[in-house]
Image 1 (cartoon, rainbow, N blue to C red):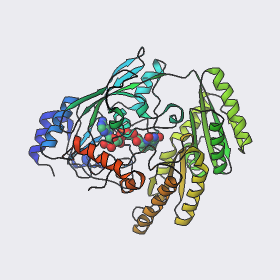
Image 2: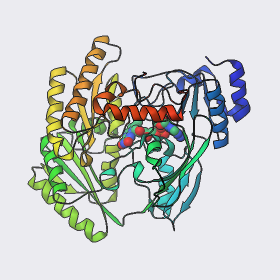
Image 3: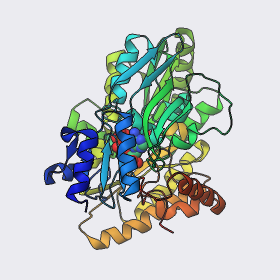
Length: 461
Ligand SMILES: Cc1cc2nc3c(=O)[nH]c(=O)nc-3n(C[C@H](O)[C@H](O)[C@H](O)COP(=O)(O)OP(=O)(O)OC[C@H]3O[C@@H](n4cnc5c(N)ncnc54)[C@H](O)[C@@H]3O)c2cc1C
């Protein structure tokens, strides 16, 4: 519990109107996008400059006060839960787009800029920042850098780390570090950018981000396909890629999600479909027409019950809206929903689907599937009830079975949601022990007092 004197000191640094201490306010910062983790902070600090953040961290470091950086709190790994109370440092008031440089194809922003706000501004200049986590309407750029987020577009365009050119990060001792810059090429010593990108708030607070942009593709076509069998859909995805076509997006949702979205949004989705594949191809007009036709033919040959191109932009947007609503639809469907995040090699997708079916039957839990089929990133969501102890005990075994199935197929523990609190108990199964030692060493070097987002990524030693 922070002493009133400490709160007063923080007020002096950021100003009284940038501090929250009321019980109701603190409660709203006790959660993130997960449904099973919570932790109430002693104080929420809403700084407006990097200098203020530097002073807050110096103070916290000196007094060994834990600091949890936070953007919009949409992560689904428990990353912004203040497990030890202390300070939640929320960046949402640092929301200025500082520069859009069309000649250099870069943008520089403060960390609290909402991803969609950035893309709306870029669209006016015919520019495009591809990393597209499906929380884009509310997540912050700083949060997506800290999570190295990806999304449907990453099959063709890559994830956040492929776009970050420069960062300003306030280290736990208050030092304001600048790394990278505004150049596409930069080979000067060890590359620290990818270290901070994906560091989940454990190494410092990101206060400025410069990203690489690309021109908005001239054309896009959306193709919808329905399958009676999810493994057939997985096989077609492998075939499309094996034929050297890399669509901008290949997403799939299962029957539960289709029905649930339809129930909520009345979009006219095919509610009997076992699986719906949504594919976007983009690029020049000629390339898009040719690739879309080839993809359509492969879907039809691969056993799709129905496959066709969206008639126009409005119809395409409608299907993508349904896909974006997928997670929200799932979350409302049970008392507790654990939306998992594993990745398997793309040619093992069908095998993974079969394993999920076996795990669901064996455990008795419903497992609903939504995912980025194009990059093998699958989100099996397990429906349970956190109020039933028996359910929760069984749940851990079921989640472990899902991770093990992915790892056995050559996959990873997390594709995009990060480790946070959610997966730290499994980290040792996924990484070389020496790699974990190196990571812990980096953490100790930068944060010897362990004030920055403690308890995340590793079990305590
Ligand atoms: C409906 C939904 C759909 C999603 N879809 C996807 C998806 O398709 N792909 C994907 O990759 N993810 C997805 N996510 C999760 C994704 O990780 C987050 O939405 C996003 O990256 C977090 O942004 P945020 O601003 O909410 O950060 P928060 O949740 O507030 O924080 C995330 C982590 O970053 C740290 N952090 C935040 N800001 C900073 C900062 N300035 N400096 C240092 N550390 C910081 C926090 O401590 C925490 O560990 C989804 C989440 C939801 C709820």
